[in-house]
Length: 89
Image 1 (cartoon, helix red, strand yellow):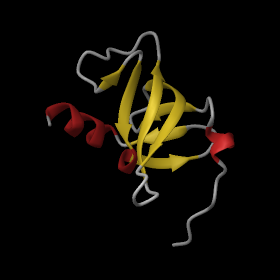
Image 2: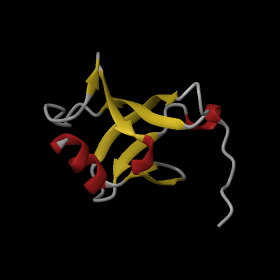
Image 3: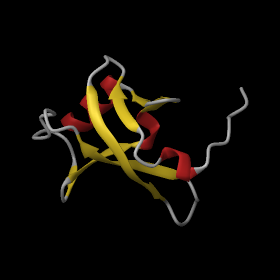
């Protein structure tokens, strides 16, 4: 399967939802591994109603592993199970 190329500028302020349809927040930034050039994490400004108590945080943002991304379109969809697994780890 060929991966579509997307400019990082087009991702800025894009809504993030989990695969169950819950609003997670808005993309603020992405983290890149300087050694490999691979995207490693999404930095998301959480939705006000989101319970962030069990999510990885950095300041006012939540961190999600990039490998949890299932789709990028009008919204970024992340795999609910991978987010839950991150909480357990």
